[in-house]
Image 1: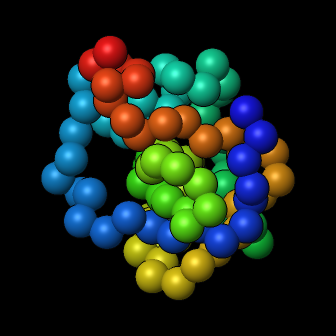
Image 2: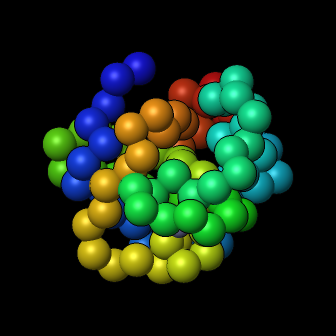
Length: 98
Ligand SMILES: [Zn+2]
Ligand SMILES: [Zn+2]
């Protein structure tokens, strides 16, 4: 899956959302087929990735989960992702509740 790394935003008000995976971090692990990364996937950030953040992009359909740190999860401006970031669909009907 090749998706632009540019121009992502946090989806606000997703803190109370949950899924069958137990956490969005676990959701990302389950559907990325990758190990959880050591660092946040927001470009230029070197903090530890602690949670699965909901993000969206005006040029991309749907919402996605990315590994992020607490402070990036609170960004209200647009940000870019590291180029090798794997985005997992946040759409439960396409993933854990399909
Ligand atoms: Zn899930
Ligand atoms: Zn970060």
